[in-house]
Image 1 (cartoon, rainbow, N blue to C red):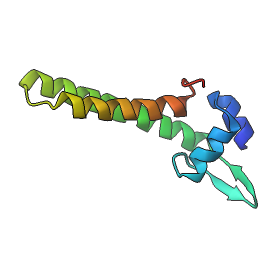
Image 2 (cartoon, rainbow, N blue to C red):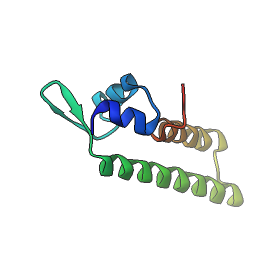
Image 3 (cartoon, rainbow, N blue to C red):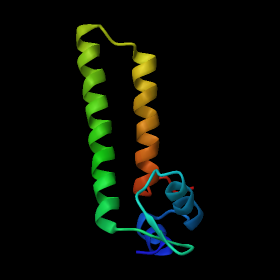
Length: 94
């Protein structure tokens, strides 16, 4: 899959796809000067991101119940992870 095709699939700009790939935030490989992406790998990354957000949310909820949560720190980490997941999912339609 090309960067353009992936951008359309995720509803992101091509430049965002290139930036994420160059930073190693999404799996891809280069053939010459062109980036290519495996859709199954991208979908796997999305599933993993969703699972990570859910685990973090569950951890914070568990800590809140026991009173051992640093709400500011834990919730900031969740927000950061959610923003990454949203960008990858294409829900962040800047």
